[in-house]
Image (cartoon, rainbow, N blue to C red; front, side, top):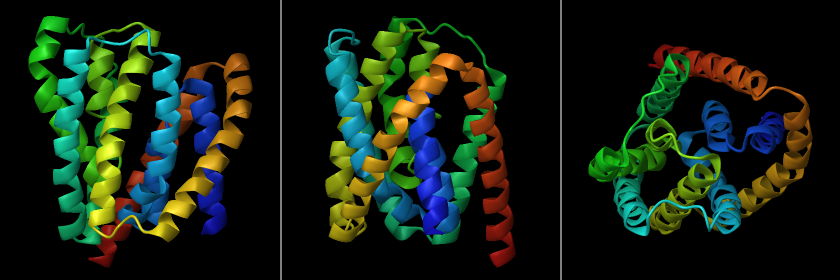
Length: 244
């Protein structure tokens, strides 16, 4: 199981190096399948905080308006609190099914590939409920991408603006998530040390991913990740239902 977890972190680092994202989407489902959702979420706090803080600094001159990002982040932080509460009170079976459900939602969105332009004026009206939803997904299932990434993608932002702005959101909600997980007894010192090790593995694999990303089409990585996620979601559904 440790070997599989290590390989998952390596693959996630390679994918992130190649296409700039994908760590939670890969690592959370695999660790949920091997262990449980709580461990999966706790293990990624250091990678989420460090890698996104680095991208905030890199793209600090290419961000959406501060008021927009503040509303998005504050709503996401509230969602984190609600999602972490669910992480504590819900059974492992329900949480596992929740992760599988989020995977299915993510895959449906990726397959549909709708290129709907969302004007900023409309996005500004939706930013609080979408931020809240993304925070709940991140807190309870470890993956906010079906809400947060899809929302900013719909705005059809330039690459620099997208990376910088989504990284601000991820840093903000992770800063709320860490004390929430500590208070809930989910993020222990031992798990935090494992989180640091996970960060090291991911960072070590990212340069290889960057080289592969320059040689191979990003669609190849995207399709492989989708196939992997579909298999994991199916296994989580089957295992949970059979156990029940």
